[in-house]
Image 1: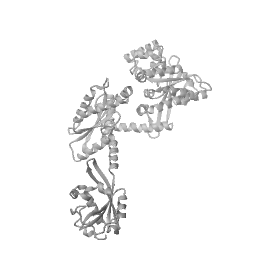
Image 2: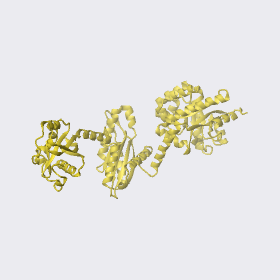
Image 3: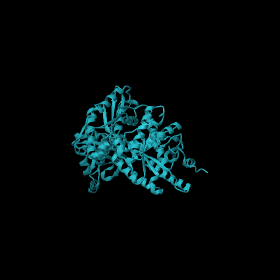
Image 4: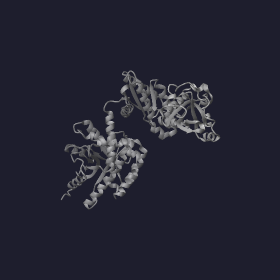
Length: 585
């Protein structure tokens, strides 16, 4: 460097010589053009020289004087940490011999932290006395505040100002880091799922729903204690983590406290609302805890709590089952997209004549890797994921298409009906009437050849909507059967008022009915009720000739079961009908 060597700085780099009070520079005063150039720079800029082994500010523009007044005219402020930081960066730059250096400076102001992106570069100009250092400082305060605001939005819930799912995880990670060597404390996570929140939104509107969430957040904040942190991790889900020094007892105590505080009715405007919640918990030694895993485990436990009605603690294997359901959902989605499912057809027999009056279409899935997947496994997954709507639509179209194919094969309309099951979830989410009408039209099929089977839950979940749907089916000559009758929640008043055609007795009543007098009495009562209401009856699960004969003698209309046939492929079902109809060649 001209005028001073890097060696001259060594040993003196942090001398207390103040910026702005150093000796007069050896160069002559710079011309007006140079000063005009400096003032024309958009950022704070200064030319730095040195005297007696210490830096001093030789020239600066008005922006620099405005942004950094202590550095140019207040020697007593030179002890501030941010000034010492700049001095150290300048000296390190000179000693490094590098052409450029970048660094950041932060300082506290009455309005908060101010941030500057600084660049140091060498210049060599006779106007300033030869080789000097140019400091350029870009004010990043506004950008930093925008970043901080976005950061707050990223980790906070906008309604409650509580941490959101991301913030919840970060706070857990900070807690885990503080207890890295703690072998006695455990970390417990609670997931609180508000089970009736959706109904509040539907009935009272989103503003009432927001008011409910705020009320619950306030209650939870008041009961969790100083060792716990609460977050809103979903629309109707709250998360809580606690440093459990007494292990599972701390977690259970907190869960019971939460359950008690939420059991008291909440006042919304002029209404009083009771809130039901499902609480699932997970626990891990704090030094080994994985935040994401703990949350997933607690969520798995909360799903079980919805059915059990009590606080549930995660047990090994539950998350594996949840992952298996997720895996099945992914494979089922692919199977529906590429026609990977098939329908099997179980004959429905008229017990009096022994003739085949129709078939029940049953979804079957054989996966390339998983093999045969039971409907008991994939139907609940389809209902939980919403794929049941797509599955139900496919089943109706496929069953009617197969009927059309049988008509073509027979050369005339086959005297058969096909029954298709529809889930209560599909009834709630889909326009079932339009879907069925489209399927009938697409396959040129009359409604009288289709029977829709609904469970009792589908009929009682939304009776007004269900009644309108059944009346639409009735106008289209589509028969409706109540499946698994006797196992649900039906009452005689609703049964009498609904336009049903068939009651299907659940197989649990038919199995061992000849040796169980209670089952026999229930079957007689169902058959008598159906006869009084003008409905036909179907008995499922008939396994032997004696049961078939007894049901026929008691007046049961139709029967299904392995005694007649297992579910058959489409070709085998057609041949079964031909053989029972004396049409076989």
